[in-house]
Image (cartoon, rainbow, N blue to C red):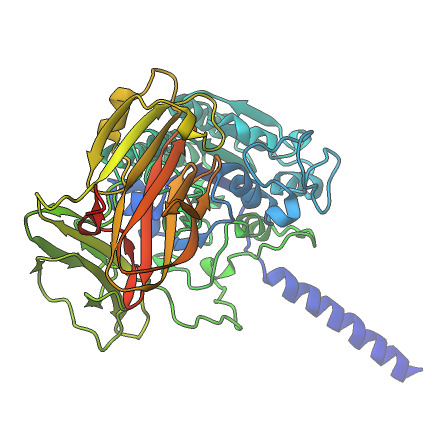
Length: 556
């Protein structure tokens, strides 16, 4: 009998010890979490704009510079994933057209309001007395969370009114959980372009608004018990986003305040849906099994990186090749009867740049970049950075195209007005409004803008000419366009990239003889930003923009 009692006492002691140990595995004393979401704010934006507030938060907190978003890199599915702890495959929000009563993919599990469980609903369920509020600049955010879960739900038309109301809410209600959304940076990305001075100005404005939120937290007297998280839904490229590129699909996440390590660079891989799990972790909430997000524990004092963290080779930031990319123009450029100067710079400290001029991917045996140099013929320049621990960057590519006047190079471009197009029209049945010659396949905004009808963004372009094939063999052509495009060689359709879509690349192959072959590209813009690049690769030739010196107005 005494033996049984002893076993019982030991079992109880073990259970209590395990429960105590589990309690210790959560941060202690975080009573408030404030999330500041800035639509369209890229890591490039934070690094290159004037952002003293976020710089201070990074220095005094934890940061992950390359948080991976979900695809496509549009707003609805990414804001949803952020607060729902899962991706589109689970929550069913796959595009910006999603509505609660109009969608194609149902959530894998739904709550009372018919949507996948979000951090708003989970917090309300487990902390019924919590003060929960959301103030948002983009109205679409309001359809993504459980309305019954929040005490405060406001939408405003400007970033300033959004900030003013949210800071007042903090000071008067001291919310357990508050989420504010600013949309003006995304507006600048679409209107002026990512990486432009106007875009960086918008990021700086966001930084000042973040400063106002931090000031309100301090004035409300809750600073010592508040975790603040700054994040975004996507980045961008040119005047748009939606595609699968690092520029569009990577964001920064900054954690600052109660229990957060100071000056810490988070090592574990982080995904946008880890935000909800991290908030649940901070509040010691039980996460739904349907969530796939994991808390970023290593950002908190007393917690280490995951023991099973497989880092492999860390991807460091790619070097910059100048002239660098500008909106829709690839790095490099078109040079008419003049040489080009190639300059490079490393983004990552203590890294070395290796480069090639023949289209090969650089490695540690390639030439080391030391100073600017000159080239006088069409060249594909590729560069890669390696740090002193062996980590490497993605490849940076620049296309330098050289052409001499008077050689017959170029394409004939026909401009067509359109209305409501969702796919390429039958251009043969339409009359062009204007024609001109262009050295390359490009959509020049300075040329297009004066031709567009006010309030009507829809137009089409048809490029006609000949491409010089020097070596017979199999060639692969591709178009990267926003919106639709098709490519024809000798009147045969080779690439079909049609439709109303964001920046998308499609490819096709064809066997060609040496000599000049007829080439045609059709393109249309439905609405918003527009983009067209045309690439090819062939025997002994790396993938590249089809250069001006290989395009001709006539067959001979």
